Amino acid sequence: MKYEIIEKQNGEISNHIKCIRSVNEMQILAEDLECIEMWLDNKNVPTHDKDGNKYSHIGRIEQLLNVC
Image (cartoon, rainbow, N blue to C red; front, side):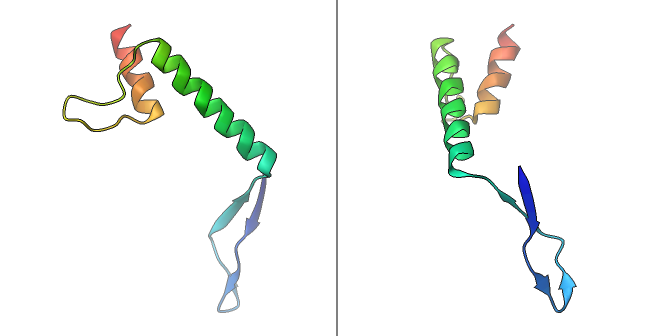
C-alpha cells in the first residue's frame, strides 16, 4: 500500500496522509467484504439489533462470537 502527504499548507507539510490503492486492490477488498457478508448470512447472524439499527460487519462478527 502506498501513502502520500496530501499537500503543503502555508509552506508546511500537512499531517494528513492519503492512502492510494489501485482499482484492483479495491475490487479484491470489495469481494472479501462480500464473502464475509455471505458467510455471516449462512451462519444466520442478525443484520440488525432489536431497535432496528444495522450492524456493521464487525458488529455482526461480535454477535457471532457472543453466541459461542
